[in-house]
Image (cartoon, rainbow, N blue to C red):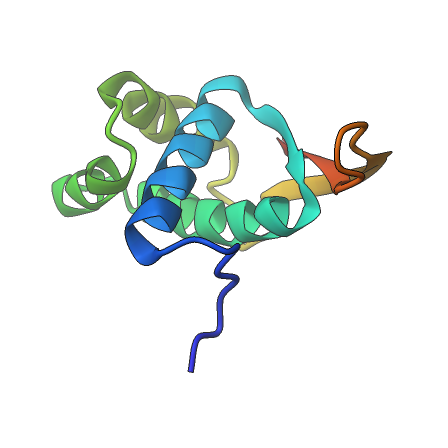
Length: 114
């Protein structure tokens, strides 16, 4: 039984989608996407930030296996994770922005809290 959203994609497409979205999210600190994708990104980004807070080589390699961009991984470990060093959760905030013009999908903006 799957406890995650499949988003109408097979597993490899879904994995590639979230790698791309997470890389952009940590690169810019804020992205606009659908609400369901934003909720998944919030959960997955919390896992990565928690890993980055450990700040050891094993955690860095685990994050780099997901975020294939080394500059974004470096930013996560050196800029983003230290901001959340004393926080145990709630790293992201999701704002609903209304329906998308083309297909009326509910859109949201997800951003880092600090």
